[in-house]
Image (cartoon, rainbow, N blue to C red; front, side):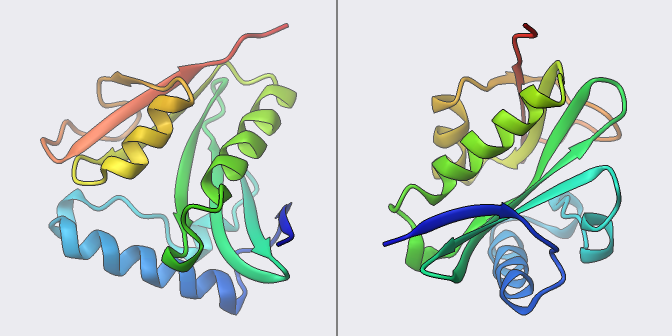
Amino acid sequence: MSLSIAVESPRQDGVIRLLNMSDAYAESLYPAESNHMLDLASLEKPEVTFWVARINGDIVGCCGLVEAGDGTAEIKRMFVDPTARGLSVARKLMETLEAAASEKRLEAIRLETGIYQPEAIALYKRFGYVEIAAFGSYQPDPLSLFMEKRLALT
């Protein structure tokens, strides 16, 4: 098995398939007002770095890092194809985005996830993310969990 992570355009069939799967999953768990997904056009903006994970060339995961312009960034659209779960794809995506955030000298990475996604929450906690209050344009939502990891600037 050959796992690779690279910055790529989100506008490709394999990524669109993952985003559609992610949307359907979120819609099955939460009402529309509690889903905070970025659309394809938003993922193509200059402040977004978008990574694609491939196993043997096949797209199996993705995530974006959206810089806020204030020294922080937010993880968006982190998703791994269910057929590739358990193969360390999410871990490798997290390691890659955190390394990029450090290179950009960002102070913190933030995220919003849903309370009914224990695997995602466990992943973020393993990487040292802690719960925080709603940030940016988010409003408090009993179905949302907001998390942050402060990065050491060297």
